[in-house]
Amino acid sequence: MFSEAPELYDLIYQSFKDYGAESKQIAGLLAAEAPEARAVLDVGCGTGEHARYLWEEHGYQVDGLDLEPAFIELAKAKVPQASFWHGDMADFSLDATYDVILCLFSAIGYLRSVDRLESAFRCFRRHLNPNGVVLVEPWFEPEAWLPGRTYLNTVEQDDLRVVRLSHSGVRDRMSVVTFHYLIGSDEGIEHRTEHHELALFTRAETMDCFARAGFAAVRHDPKGLIGRGLYIARIEGER
Ligand SMILES: C[S@@+](CC[C@H](N)C(=O)[O-])C[C@H]1O[C@@H](n2cnc3c(N)ncnc32)[C@H](O)[C@@H]1O
Image 1: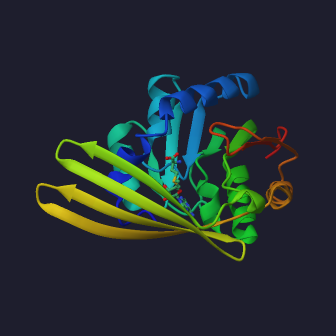
Image 2: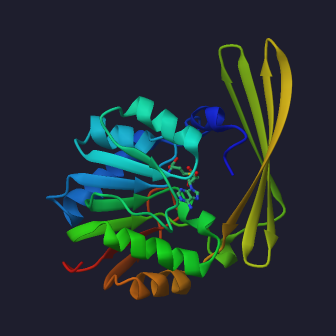
């Protein structure tokens, strides 16, 4: 997954993704959905960018969980007062519960199967306080995925120049994304490759998993934070 170039994640994504604006949208949504909420768990938190903004600009106490150990270290350095755990979102057990669970920027797609999606939602439910809310920003639905395309990102910082060329593929119901990085510095040019596979869950599959995991009220906002949609799920006070 992200293990080939974790140190480049912020440089690349912050060049086109506005984490500050997204965090403001999340805070606005939470103010309406769960006005008393303070404790937030960001699952698939990556390098902790949403956690940082939600803490610094909106006063939420945000912990995080991610599968990539290098991201956990980056997140800890950004938000030292928070707890960041290394773990699998489909199989985790923490000694804490939360008012809000976030799972953003399509991290959920990496679960790869409907069974693991349901397991993740069961874990979310177990870690949610009464009246808590879950926000899940999904990956693409099958009909929206466009295989056979390439996408280019270029970024520069001091003597570092990075070119990332991605290719979108598909295998059955799995999207396959290959990233080729060319990383240039005064030392020379390095080439690295990463393969990512994310399941193309349908809306019905996602809704069914929420229901089987015990979420009684689930809404889908087709636009969400960046046009990928957003699920807003509650268990209606029960745990
Ligand atoms: C596209 S990144 C999004 C990261 C972050 N939420 C953001 O907005 O930048 C997907 C994240 O999901 C994490 N991830 C993938 N599978 C996971 C799993 N099974 N459990 C926990 N984290 C996972 C990856 O390590 C990565 O940090």
